[in-house]
Image 1 (cartoon, one colour):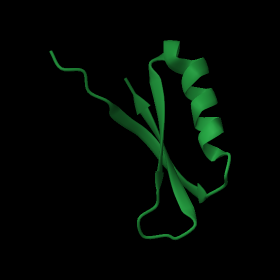
Image 2 (cartoon, helix red, strand yellow):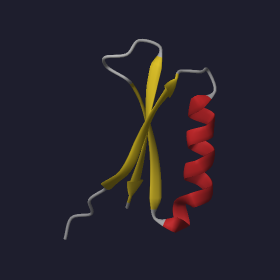
Image 3 (cartoon, rainbow, N blue to C red):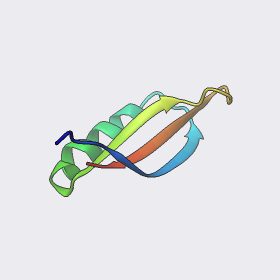
Image 4 (cartoon, rainbow, N blue to C red):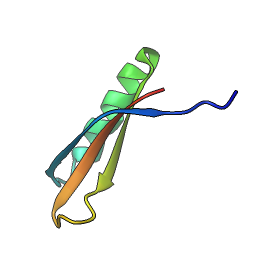
Length: 56
């Protein structure tokens, strides 16, 4: 059986230099809760990033 991630939710926010640190902190501290946070640039919104919450 292949492991798949399912999206729980997304949020668009203003890009900051340390946003990746927050996502890393959340992933390190919540890995035993079967959730993963992702961070990507918002394609259609300059200066914005998308935080995605996945269920592992």
